[in-house]
Image 1 (spheres, rainbow, N blue to C red):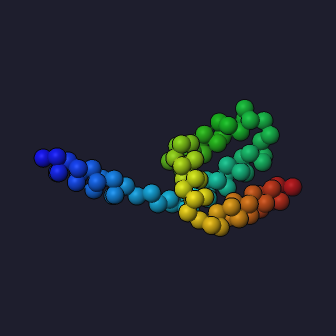
Image 2: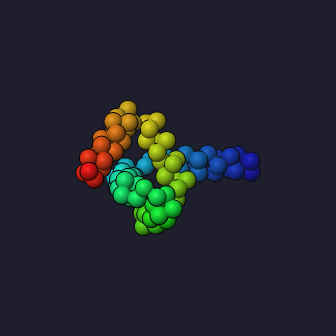
Image 3: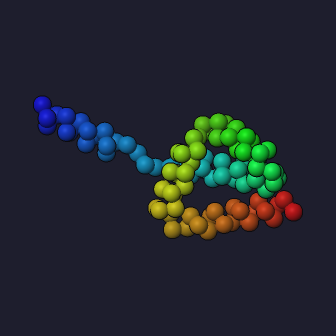
Length: 93
């Protein structure tokens, strides 16, 4: 019986997919950057960002986890993030 339990746990563990929907992640990240660049007052920006999380069906914790997963697995992640930030900041001048 223990073997079945252990095998079941191993199957469950291995079937958990740590892949990230990069398109969804970067779309949300872009929207967050836009809100933050347009609203200097965090008391106004924070509720808007929370609404974005709901719209994208993302929790803040999941977003942070995905951020770290992408940063860890993608060597070009930092340059993608920097390019997106520059694009948003230059577009809002």
